[in-house]
Length: 154
Image (tube, rainbow, N blue to C red; front, side, top):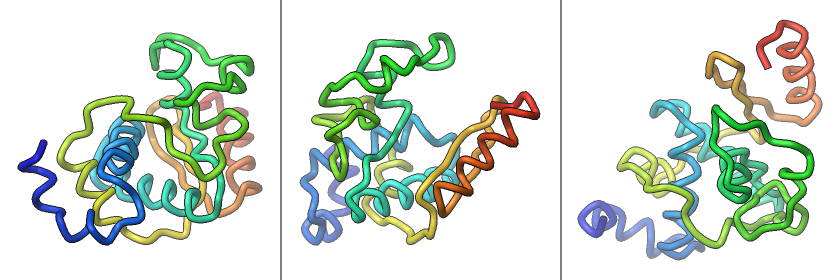
């Protein structure tokens, strides 16, 4: 891990986040994205949300927080609203990261968190095939959810 982090000494020193926080964010990006392009955009979404004092709203942190298995177990409203220091969808998590990593981030996820690309997006979602959709506004996001639900893809 230290060998990987040594590549980003300048970025770490300039960041308002600690190494622990950056690795926590990278761990979330790792589980949310399937490839470099998606991870770049996801990291951008999360930085936009953090910078604007929003919660991350990450499903993977909710699964981790309530001890359920992604792709196997269903999340319920009671899971989403459960206050837990890992659940970024719970109340009180606006502008905050979980207390620690939820997975072991790979080099690609570390890179996109250490060297984030700017994006205009604030929201994303996966359809049932794993395809990601990015949105700028909550209305656009909600409309995509409705459309995908009607198509049986959400």
